[in-house]
Picture 1 (cartoon, rainbow, N blue to C red):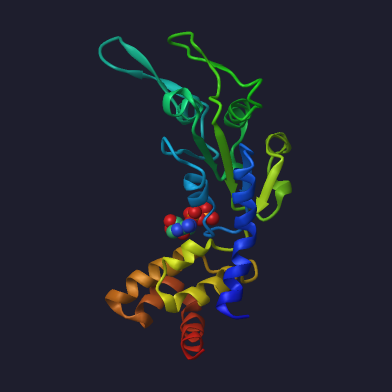
Picture 2 (cartoon, rainbow, N blue to C red):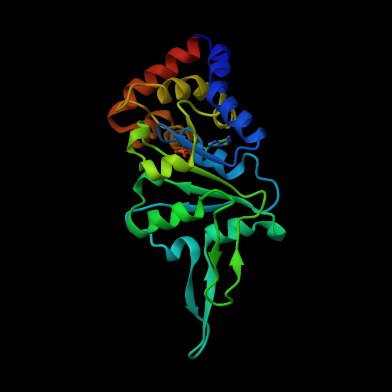
Length: 243
Ligand SMILES: Nc1ncnc2c1ncn2[C@@H]1O[C@H](COP(=O)(O)OP(=O)(O)O)[C@@H](O)[C@H]1O
Ligand SMILES: [Mg+2]
């Protein structure tokens, strides 16, 4: 398989995402191996006015980190600071923006219930600001992309999965992500990211290698970044250089 053919393949899952967003689908789940560009695409693709709001789910994520919290603003004075989900509902000028919910499989308990409320259908979703009592609804352009590095859709809570009828498995890096690597690293990085589970090499490692080798040489950079896989990566680079 030549690199050109590989690049054509690369487009498929990414073309699905473009088509879905262009069709106006406002709730999308991207899942699959880490380091392929899911978060990057969620933050940038189809985002025009206000920058996307991002939430990274952990077991410790609280509702307050999603919708907002009371903050002290002086002696005995507290103000409600709206969280990323409500800011994304409002977007620029109340039109609604993009909310990115990363590592969504890790959300649980209260945070998961709040995420369910924030990603409810536009007709049902509403939230009341506890300070002003204003009822807030998602603006007409509000969209939410959830990402997860899991390989199996069944590991996403079914209630959340149900909110996101379109789920796209992103199994390869975006062409632009590969293109931002030095030319000789693109084919090995693509091959590395398509490897079997457990032996995949994330694009992030190739970015780090690309930067490091400029300063300390390929051998040392490979040892630092790829550790026990250093030799096989250097071999792959040598073979790619001959092609
Ligand atoms: N289209 C792109 N153009 C440039 N860099 C990208 C692109 N997509 C991803 N990257 C870079 O690749 C790395 C991995 O992307 P990320 O979105 O974090 O992957 P994932 O969410 O799938 O784990 C990041 O350093 C990111 O900045
Ligand atoms: Mg990510």
